[in-house]
Length: 306
View 1 (cartoon, rainbow, N blue to C red):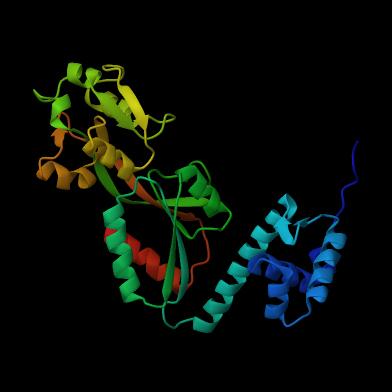
View 2 (cartoon, rainbow, N blue to C red):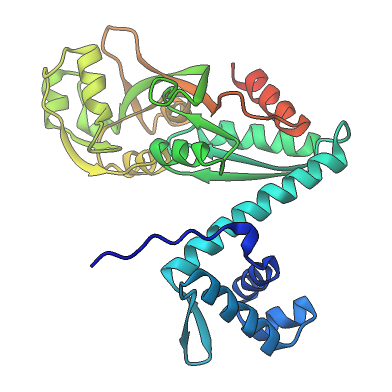
C-alpha cells in the first residue's frame, strides 16, 4: 500500500513547539523543561503533542512516567542540535569578528594518528588560545569524511587524501610517517628473515586493508610471505600494547615504536629497502567559510606538522 507524500514547510511550523520539543529532549522530561522555559508542564506537553500532530509523526513513546524518543524523534533531535550549534557559532562569529580567537573547533582524527604528537599540539594551541574549545572525534576515515561533508566537523586529520573520492573535499599533505615492523625478540631470535616472519603471529589493524601485506609487498614483493594475522586491533595504541605484551609482530609508525626500541623492549626488524611510508593529510571542505578562529587553527596545524 502506498501513501501520498506530504510536504510540510518549515515556516508553517510553530517554532515555539520545536523549542519546547528540544527542551524536553535536553532536560529529560516535561517538568524540568517547563521550569527552564518558564512555562507550565501542561503547556509544554501540549506543544509537543501539537508538533507531533503537525508533522504526523510520533516523537516520543510514553513508557510509564518516562518519555523515550522514537526513531523519528531521534532524527529531529539530532538535526535540531546541529542547527542550534551552527546558529550559536554564527552568533559567536558575529560578536567576536576581528577579535580574540574564540569558540569551538571540531576536529576528526583517524584512529592511528600519533597520539602523543597530537596531544602536544592541542595542549600548546589551547594554552595560546584559552577562549577556544576543541572537540576531537576519533573514528575510521570514511566516517570522518562523511561527517565533514555533513558539516559536523571542521577539519579531518587523515591517513590518505580524499579529494579524488569527493570533489567537495580538499586535501593538504602534512607529513610522512615511516612504518616499521617491530616485535619482541623471541619471535626473531636471529634477526629478520622471511621464514621467521611467516611463523610469527601478527597483529594488524583492519581486515579490509591489511597493513602487513602492504609492508611485505614493499620490502619483499607481493605474496612473498603469507602473514599469520591473529588479532585485528584497529587502533595504533592497542596494536602497540599488544606487541609489548608479546602478542606478535606488527607494523607501527616509527615515532610510536621508537621509545620502546630505544629501551630495547622491542626490536625493529629492518630489511634492506627504505621504509614504507604513509602520508598524513589535512582534509577540509573545499571553499568552506573560515572565521578567524578556524583560520588560526588551520595555520597552526600546517606550521606544526608540515
